[in-house]
Image (cartoon, rainbow, N blue to C red; front, side, top):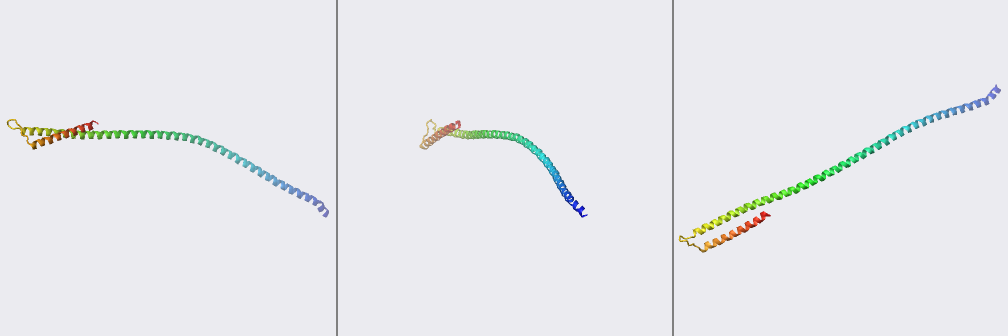
Length: 180
């Protein structure tokens, strides 16, 4: 049996080696299959990522187009608002100018009314002075037509004439101011 065992021994070693080679080949084949599957998964993931990248590019281009349109619209809106602000500023300046002119005109009308009232007062005072002078002249006349002229009366008459002259000068000056 020993011979049989000895004769079988190289066969067993050979079978054992072949079984080891078969096991290694199986392991390598299994590893190859795993690697192939991994490559297929990686390829599928890469294709999916490529699709996502394309979608993102399209979305970005769309957004850039929308952003450009939005930017153009915002720029037009800004220009329109600036134009409206300029118009409002011009309107405000025009209204301020008209208001100033109105205030000046109103002040001038008020001044003219005040000057006219003062003028009327001066006219009235002047008329009263003239009337007083006539009364004084007529009371200083004697029955025979001769006038009594004493120094006090002459002084009074001179003062009245000075007042009349002052009133007339002031009246003329106010008339000139009211005409301006």
